[in-house]
Length: 331
Ligand SMILES: [Zn+2]
Image 1 (cartoon, rainbow, N blue to C red):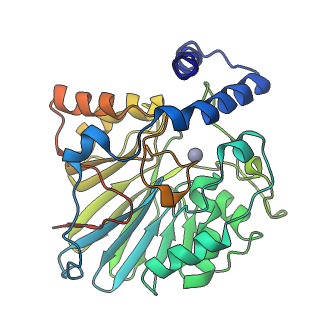
Image 2: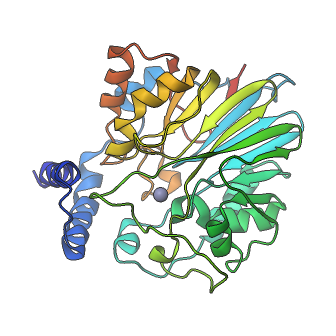
């Protein structure tokens, strides 16, 4: 009952543009935290038929292949011969309570150690879409530990550098950079609204202190990336709105954030423009749960709607899902 009420309230806020006060948001988040574990079953459930994964112990990718490993939230590892690129790695999984109450936070050292043991020793670059904790927080220690170049907006790097990042490269939409034998095109993107507004908005304009609390990790300019490697083109963003279109395709794989209603509203339009061979809806797991508890859909996501839309509107590309740390090779 409370679960349904929370969801209805959220929809009303989104559709009417009514902005609830901070206390109301926190109460709703608390209700969500209490009810959510009781109502959500783990795993891909009835959508398991869309899961793609390599056979266990498959050999590494050939020269013309890209192996893609899902790290949860909007985090991915792209690997081909001689190149490894991370997108938005996030494993610390700050809980809903600290997030709702803007607690002091830091990367979880045990989770960082654990992910480092599962990643290739050499990572060439970490591409970060924006400055929120579920995209940038862990990119800093992973970048330091692996020596990977942290590629992000200027605002995000003005957060990451005082937080400890040392090898950084600021990019903006329109930039084209080389990462090993791959090419990364930096594209404009939008950020979904939550209760009618972008969470933790704004950009850092000049050097400052290291971010301490959740709200210190401000969005900055959201970016999308078109990664060209091993003869394949992979588009990745973390969500967006109807106002910001992805580039004209075709691409081999489109990874599109659908965490919130804005991302889902522009899903069909984005897929039509990108003309992908494969479509991977992203950022739809419950990223407040520890990674070790496995995939479960977030309360505010609506994958059945995404799936219905993809089939009902005859959108291009094969709709697929990935599970945590179960690699799949794009051929
Ligand atoms: Zn965000």
